Amino acid sequence: MNKTIIEFLNEHGYVAEIKLCDKGDIKKEAIVVRRPDENVGAILYTDFLNKAVAENGLDNTLEQLIHYVEKSLIYGPSQETVEAIISREGFEQNILVGLERICDTEFIHRPLKDFQGLQEYMYIKAFRNSFGEGLIRINKRHLEIAGVTEDEAFGMAHRNLSKETVIIPMADALAKLWPVTDDPYGPDEVELPMYVVTNRSSIRGAANILDKKAINEIAAARGWRGTLTVIPSSKHEMILIPSSECPMPDEVMKEMVSEVNRTAVGYEDVLIDAVYKIPLDDNDKSSVA
Image (cartoon, rainbow, N blue to C red; front, side, top):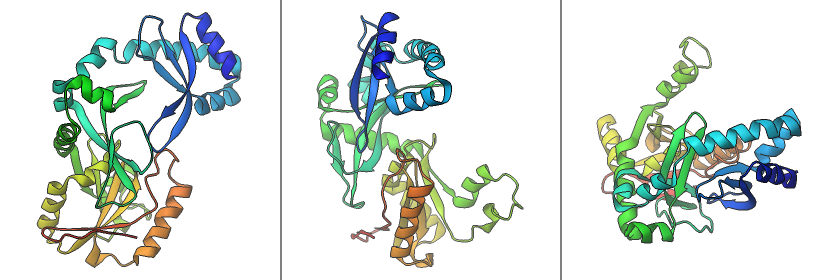
């Protein structure tokens, strides 16, 4: 089927080829499509294409595909936009941090001392519109083009991350899903002091747990002391609970996280089966269950 799709795209004037796309802790096969005179292209993941063909048939999928590719190339970033982003000024304004499981990847990354099993990487949002979101994950070549060192880039990324941090009570987060508060399964049932840590877009917001200033500020405002229990909900958010008010043993919570990851979180959004304890203020030790 992939050969048929590539031939179809070639007949319509596009350059299309199969590649294994490095998405950090996930590697996915995709058809990369671009115009002959451009380096920026659209990515069509083959698992998505297989599902579309199974549901809609090959002919209908091909018809829809050509419209999607054209819109993606029109509304996606131009070569000029990408060149502007991959610069010192572009980094200072746009670079951010994401989290993923420790893995081998071509992109710049470094392990996290306080969150064993996780590493941070850097990315820039190239565009976001009704057709999706395009990211540029940062590699060594990008740093060379921008004239920025790895430490400088991570510093910029963390400063930008701190501007995006959102920490809200779990009840408020659930209220978005259950607007009627008298729903017996809604936010009124949340009694623990649980808080969701994410960013303004709620996409890749788990990394905002690295905003220590924001974490310590809310802890001070709530009178929390000692350590916080951190539950990785997904790559998009973390859950905070004061350890002194958490009724469940760490191993029970870890089993719960593992079960939720297997049954309720999309495999691309799973962060890790772990529960962390992070210190507040002058404490200097972190632990992982």
